[in-house]
Length: 404
Figure 1 (cartoon, rainbow, N blue to C red):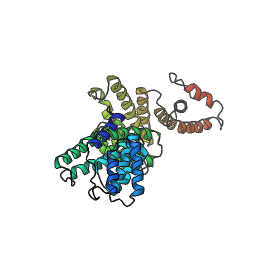
Figure 2 (tube, rainbow, N blue to C red):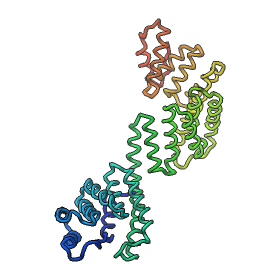
Figure 3 (cartoon, helix red, strand yellow):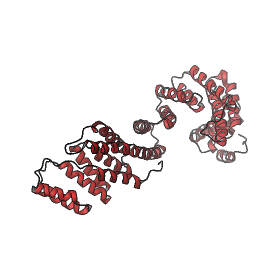
Figure 4 (cartoon, rainbow, N blue to C red):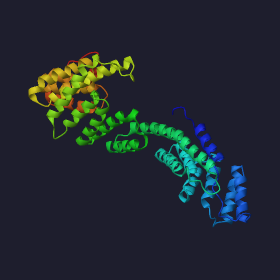
């Protein structure tokens, strides 16, 4: 979290309210019972006693003209006692009656630290800064212009630190939640929220790619291509993104020529990877691994496109075999090879590739197992005898099993 701590954020809020002038009490006659009760509250340093005074004040003066200030005292008292829920409750009550940049910042701080509603924390902190900038040159009655400007400038500078803290926390929570979400519609909704509250150049490309993957599952080609364009504008040579565009074009109704163009583009980029400089964000080991993955992916994707027509079946097999040479035992490549071999009447190789795909845990494992069983039954008069043993033998990725 960029080194920001709970203690530091708490310290910021305490500082703000120690130096900030309290709301004015001009509406009350000086020396009246209500004024004396108010002054006792303002002087009290013990939070528990202050709450007792506040409770008594509301009983004795239920029609007070500045209920917002009383609620603010409650909020400060509960902040001092470490009761976040009550601090939030009374800050919101006070703000519902009077907009105050310092109190808004205190509310944003406690929401950020508590971490249960980080979008609200971010929004509240932003609103506090905006309000402080707006009213900085309009001091309230009884406050010197210099003191007022200082207090509002402190709100603005502190809001900047608090906002960075809240956004960091939001990102951590967001990516944890995102990793466990499987519904693509909900993923899109989460990404929309993320861009509203935490959008930044560092995460823009991966966020766009996540949109693409979600919209692929929703079979929304237009949205996939929209985010592909945005992602490729940031990195035109991203083979993974190009592959996702190919998959979009292969949706029904299929746009095969467009898919073929994109797939060819991916292969051209992959073939040139060894001549390119290592990205600064990657280590030598990471760059070497990415190059192998992208080469395999590019040829596997072009093989998939070629697999759509019988006249390009031979080219599909060649590309898929080259993909496997780059990345042996990739379950998706093995699955596609199994289909390509079967269509090419290379039965033994087809069963072997599908068995390998069915043996390796992956997103394609279930589908590969179903296709393997279908083909195996065709070859064995509907029997699956020996199929489990074949899959077990295929778990050893160092040996390519005999298919039949």
